[in-house]
Length: 254
Image (tube, rainbow, N blue to C red; front, side):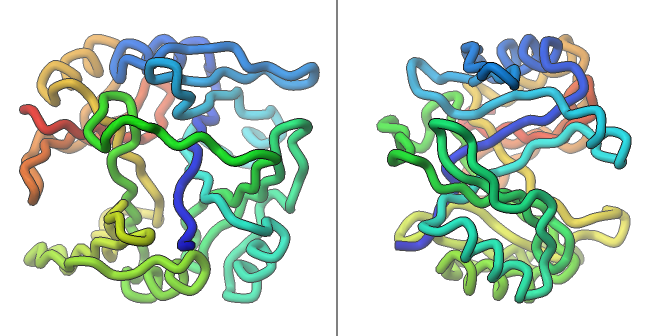
């Protein structure tokens, strides 16, 4: 089976502030999931864990790490997948590591520098039973790449993703939708020249884009793009949280 995203994690400089921000903006319910040596918060939609939150380690900050969201893709063998990333010209930022009683992960970057994580759980990750438009779930995965076509080839080889429809974005180029199995889960494109680095961004589903955008601004976030309607009828907003992590919102309602 093609691999799919199974988890999303925010690493930030002020976890408590971020917890309050996303609870208000997205509507997630925070739940403590700390381990003896690590403080960790899960975000829930209803009773379904959707994402996690932790403080950036001081050594990571010293090395230049900034608050950001990262997606975890489920694989059968983390070590083998990490080796394939490295062989293809990518980087291994955190080598395959066990999380006690949870699973094994590695933090890697594709050959163009966009970061993501590989994950294999000790048990099967729960998949949301609700529909794809349910508030609080991740509704879209988007990669801004240095070279969109080469990036797709890398992920297709690594995860078995396939091309879906390609949208003509005019001067911005082609926006390539991609599938994990029969499901269209995201899009990739060559980033505009003014975007300094390649990156993944994740779209959190909200009740209505206008109301969520107001909550975003009132809670100290910054809107950097939108609101705008996208093909298919959804509305999106892209923003920065108060600590500077980029995220996106999506809704069927304006």
